[in-house]
Image 1 (cartoon, rainbow, N blue to C red):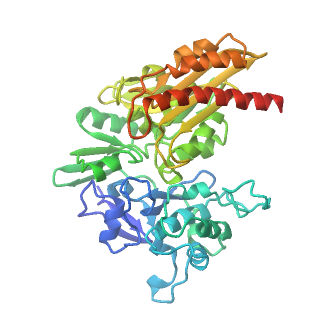
Image 2 (image 1 turned 180 degrees about the horizontal axis):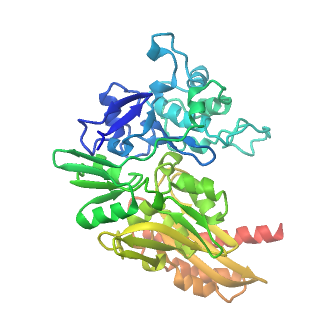
Image 3 (image 1 turned 90 degrees about the horizontal axis):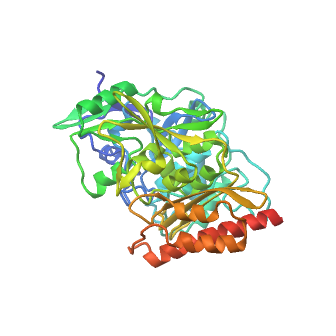
Length: 487
């Protein structure tokens, strides 16, 4: 097997002698690329942002910004990475350094003061700069779209980057001032070529091994042979365990590039989403086809996290405060579980069995998520948190209702943050179904919804507050639907 290698700023370098748990951040810094910095070590601040060449949605390759502090460098075996140092041209050849257009705008518009966060901002901005479907549009000039510039720049690209000295106005100004890549831009040209193919990896140092199987069958065989192995995809959860809790494992199996886990199919009666597709890929490929998911995505962590995080990982952790389970519960989704003996489909409402526990057996993987069709026409996702973006929810509520001739024919409500597992609000659903969609019905169902789950007091919210927010979410939905009907 070929030795594990990674291409950084156009130069190939061996991963050895880094330990299998070594992050891309530490690997780069040890090689003098100190623009990549550690701020939080848990994917929240973006100081470690770098760009990776990934399979594109609209072109062969997309430049995707990721948190280098979370990804093990072994996971990028055979892959291409660009750091903030690699964006400028000329310096490596001994000639005068020419700033990248993103770097230039950040400099001239005062987007950097202490400079600690700046390289991370620049890498995230550069990934958005190279987004193939970004295009300039007429500026309404009335502030109606503050998160999208006239150059098509989506500020959500920076939702995972934090700054504490400059303030965000000059950074926003820089983002909205960048133009489009020129024809001779090497990184823009790179998008027209295929990304590096995933390579099978077996990287061992001392008593620890990182494995990337080439097929799903091989992955399932490995999991049967090594029942204690940790499965990773985007590493957005596992990376935190490595950094904050110094967790080390003898065997890690990566499944993020398995073709069998990366399909997205729209059938006549369901939509099937591969468990290893990133949330960004799902968002762009569905393109609003599932409105409830479209409402979820901008509120799920940050773009940097969504560029790596997967539905399979979010469900696999079994966290009661994950944002996708309430939405998928409201959509009556199921999960397809696979092991070396075959597959089985489990309704998500039956999947969670306890705090971070599920029906998934040792050796089983989540292969895909299935969403039945047709979809309910009235949907909403309400995330209650201390920040609009890049935060963990105190309460999450997802609604999917069929309302015909003023009557609720069908109601599905998924809840997060109010019990040891994500749950369906069955009693509240029953209080709505078969009744008129009126203020009286909603008031009665609100009282029922407030009693659902077993909320607790913690540092994010009190149990009383969580219960109150459940009721307010239903009242908000009613107000929104009434306004839509009256309009």
